[in-house]
Image 1 (cartoon, rainbow, N blue to C red):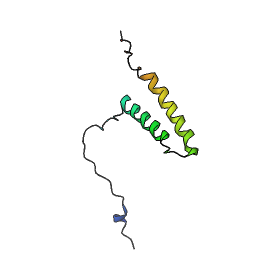
Image 2: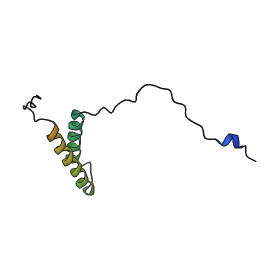
Image 3: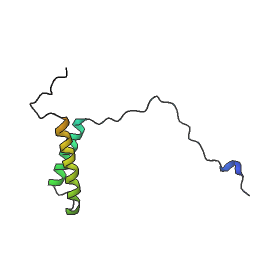
Image 4: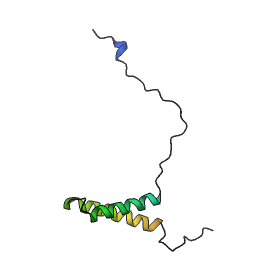
Length: 80
């Protein structure tokens, strides 16, 4: 016979370490990812069947970055 007292799941005890940390992803990080994808595609890191999916993701990332990050030499409009 099994002892039912020993069948209770263990509850993980966590220490209160304050608020969980927020994600730390910047526009610069996304620009680096765009460059990494570009280099990987040019070097043939993806098979032919994967390139269209990678290209679609690259295009979405590129459109997003162009919308949120001003081009080099352009200052963002001052907020009033």
